[in-house]
Image (cartoon, rainbow, N blue to C red; front, side):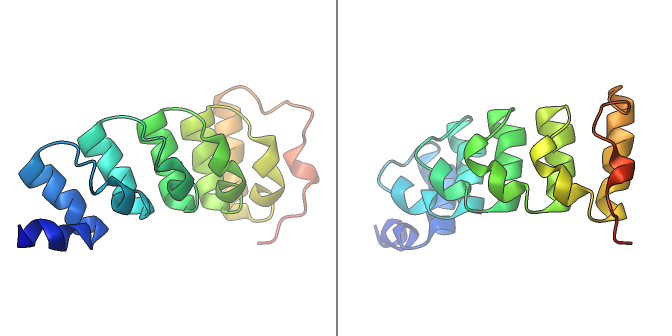
Length: 144
């Protein structure tokens, strides 16, 4: 009983308790688990084995876990988190490539700010046959 009460005070402990002791969903702890994006992602992946709509507003507050949730759990776009993901050039390129599978025009202004983002994005566009799009990557001013 004490272990269960302690787990409720700690999202990671609650996730571990659900995984190792309950061996399934633990509805009583879900409101606590949902508030921590990393733990909510792992709970969705390992316990629920799918989307967890109640946790998505919390997951959508973290760039990395939003991208990872979209890629691994939703297996598609996560519109509620896209503005946040688009603020990180590295994740924006990965999101375009691994989640959208196509250009991501909304993120292109940031992607084009640095060669470290632009080069892999240009390679990706070439791989998918989109290098001749009207949007010219060469027109952007790139900070090296």
